[in-house]
Image 1 (cartoon, rainbow, N blue to C red):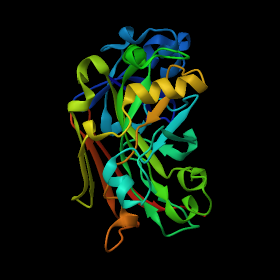
Image 2: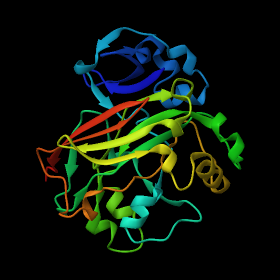
Image 3: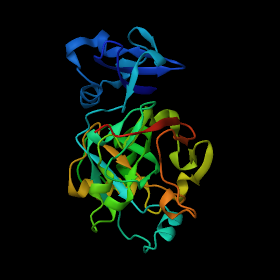
Length: 281
């Protein structure tokens, strides 16, 4: 099942499932019982969404991040060996975790905004894990049962702000600088996520390409570590890290500018596409 959230043509929010170039508006069919996808996940009612609701053309709606209002967006830094090497940092013994806020993310097909404060706007293609069942102190061997499914992220990064101090948050949280989507593919349809491959293209050129199996710290271990600290809730998103090939470390460097387009593809899930515009000030 592919789970989506979107804005209808009249600007109201909906959610449901995607099939081909259509979305099914399950939110309209369920009414006030479940105001958003996160409430469906919290109730364990995902199975009710399959094919429920009127079909709308995908190009008639504005795609949102699949869970627009997660309690947490946890990001894992330096989690592919090529990116660790290109950034000159040591191999991690524990996951390096920082946070983003929902306001920093837009959906598939919605432009990313290059901040007016910087010209070092970079791309980071990533696999996103979405939690389906709450848990604290989750053992690594039990982590899969807490995963709803997988999505795709472009963790747009403002490099100069990221490197002002040792804290990554400023460069990772500019409003509308990153994206998530187009949907969540439930884990039963993806199967073994480590058999999939991530590719990032900028203006059609491949800049990042890696198997998910190259993660330095695996998804079960990330979930075990994070849930030791805090309870993971349905709808929480974990961005698992980016591979080598980001624009800052290319020669010559490649930063995003208005008119460019970035595609992040993960096999078995789909392709997230966003153009680039300047922030309106």
